[in-house]
Length: 101
Image 1 (spheres, rainbow, N blue to C red):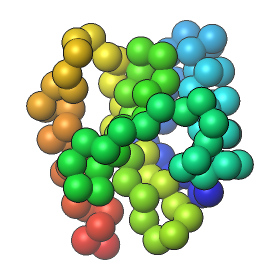
Image 2 (spheres, rainbow, N blue to C red):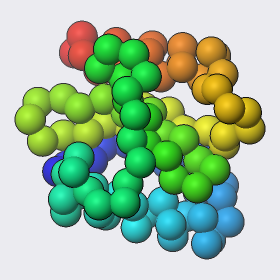
Image 3 (cartoon, one colour):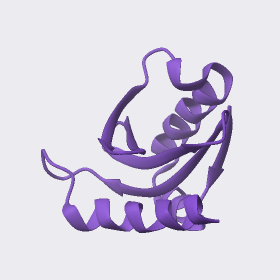
């Protein structure tokens, strides 16, 4: 699977401690290699085509376009049981931009 990142996702990951970055990149590498059936990777559908991958305390929203391309739309640190609405809205806005172009 091909993984593309919004710059904001890359910037967010770059702010994390080295150990957390390593974990995130390892999970993304598993997804590249095994696709959406990557073992031990926790994903859930948020709304429509919007999905979330859970990596430690980090949540990354994504959409799958074409057959084999995952676009990472938005990332944030989990601080409550439920995803904050403004985080979801940011991801939905970016997803619409991707799907319309």
